[in-house]
Amino acid sequence: MGMEHLNCSVLRSRTHLGLKEIKVRKETEEEEEEEEEALSPMARMFHEPQSNVYIIVIVGFKSTVDPHSFKANLVETMVKHPRFSSVQVADGGEMKWVKTKVDIDNHVIVPMVDQDQYHMDMAASDKFVEDYVANLTKTQISMSIPMWDCHILNLQTSDAESTLVVRVHHSLGDGTSLMSLLISCSDELPSFPVMKKPRSAATGRFSIWFWRCWNLLFLTWNTVVDICMCVARAYLLKDTETPLKASSSSVAFTSRRIVRRTFCLEDVKSVKNATNTTVNDVMLAITQAGLSRYLNRKYGKAKSDNGEWETNLPNNIRLTATLFINMRSSPGIYALEEMVKKKSKAEWGNKIGYVLFPFKIALKDNPLDYLKDAKATMDRKKATLEAQFRLFMAEVFVKFYPTKLAAFPSTTMWFSNVAGPQDQISIFGNPVAFIAPSLYGQPVALTVHIISYEKKISVVLSVDDNIIPDPYKLCDDIKKALKLIKNTTIGVRGLMNN
Image 1 (spheres, rainbow, N blue to C red):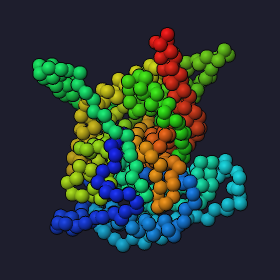
Image 2: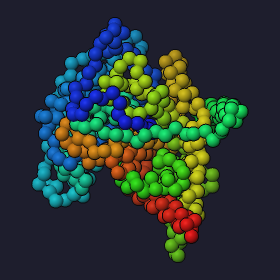
Image 3: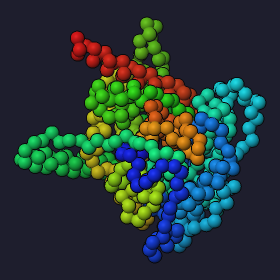
């Protein structure tokens, strides 16, 4: 989705609390022409036939939503933003943003729901919302209007009194941009996880000089290897055909089922602190472990008669994720009025790159081995310019010479991690119970989004249920993986203390 990993500082450039009208001022002739600027190469990639991608954000509220009040607030916030009040028009072979008048009734849908039918039946209510979103993924938004809409479902579910489904074409912006837009609609100023810069272990002038030279050589070597791998993956190497992988790119045109599991964020942090890793490392590790358990079940009998797991997995499974990275010079969540400023470090749009993240699919005797693998691979990906190179390739080849190098790579899955607010937020006076972002239209059958909110962290899956008909089992496997890794860390600490 462009829903990329974020380690964020507190929201910047917001001077006071309370709902605030978005300010988009035109100070120069350059800004006057903003409405007719061309779509960026990355935005154009999200219009390609095999990657015509929409972002879906499901927001649960702790209260019912008044549609009339909600529309009025949208007019003073979201509609004020240039991207949400512009259409995309073809002009001389390229797409441009053209300002238009927004009819809010075309963008806010309130379906009629028979409350009596679902009264006191939370399972049926949950299924209704899930099916509603799945049916929504079968449709597209007309390019004759700004490509976004909101669906208000005033139906009580197991974890919310009402549900808002926001659908935005990915060409309008990435996860950081849309999170900023969401925060601009909140009533209070939330805080976000603070990014901690790694400290160099070197001390002394010579040691620091040597360490920097070594890092530069390491970065150069890794980048050359990854560029070669980029070309090889485009034309030669493919992922192993598994029950998770679509046999063709036609999966981009199929509907998606979006499901989620929510964990206690403190459990994830306890593993992180005990193993000197990051939250992102832990979530990658439990995803890898969960995928291994799920595929092992698919390939044969899951357990032996004595309850132990039997290995049914083929050897050397190549399973790769397209992992999206925030490419802004100043990562973090910013107030919307800051993001729309010219030459701001907090740029609006699709400022994302991506790297290929190989998952090692295997059943491991020690669950902490999943975490070691994930950390080692992620550390390796941090020491490369692969994401910058792929962004450069998109900018060059999409615009001048479309080739496979300009398209998203053929992988088994997409993965994205977004840090959400640490505090509860309210949108237009409606307290938020949960936030679940996802995608549809992507050329993979499985997409994993990780998002934290308050004291919880959620795994959100977008699946083609023709290929993955049992996504809740995969959710259960990921949840079980976290429990196993957490219990192992507790056991290790107990042995060390003794």
